[in-house]
Length: 312
Image 1: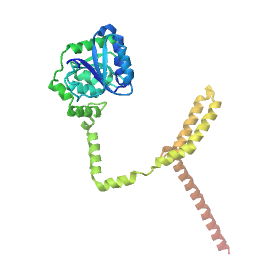
Image 2: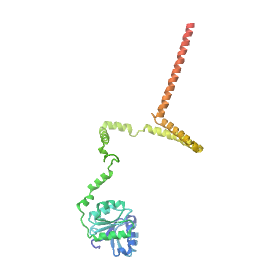
Image 3: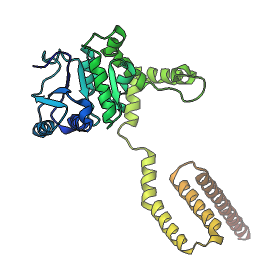
Image 4: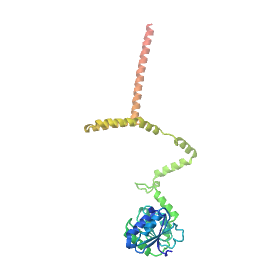
């Protein structure tokens, strides 16, 4: 039987779940924690190893029992949870202990920032691996006396409502520049939102949009696939050939050549690009010239035919 107000730790009997760090700190602390007794509760694959290491402690003592949780009345009289874990920080265990009015000894770790922010007077921190700081935190926590109910403000921090509010704040999208705090304050953002919402409410329009977009390939798929098959391979070959003949004095000339080829490939890939428009315009002009020449020849032949008829 433990005495009320003592220290304990509970978690799965795995060295990665805080037991390894706890045993290491107790061993390093040596006589600084002379006479300290900790009750441990856990079941798992590493229990035998934990028991063996606990038996080798010379100054502090760790008694290992089967795993239980905070709902078990055996845990209720304890006043201090010692959780030295940094690999699996067991935040749920910390929250449960705090909700029961207990104090916590925790490593200063990013996963424990929540406890350091909201429960600075109930949590005692030490730097990771610092045995002296660990001893100080344990002694301060035990000296604070038996468990005491949390104030209303700190109790609220452990509620579901408070957790949801923190989630919403963390997920909130903010404007990174300008005078607005949130996107919804910008008129353009509100307009985009309203347009989207209004469109999605119209079932007929929604079905039309889905039918036209979902599960269908876009022209970009065809352009990119064609470029991968032909244009990219040619560009790589040209680049290798050019690399062999490059000399510092000709570097700019080669760069211009590559840029021209890239523009040419872009024109082949993207309809309506300047290069394609130029090529199309040129083709149209050439076709017009050919038509003009063809018309002139036809008119001349007609005139010759007319002369022959008059001569006849």
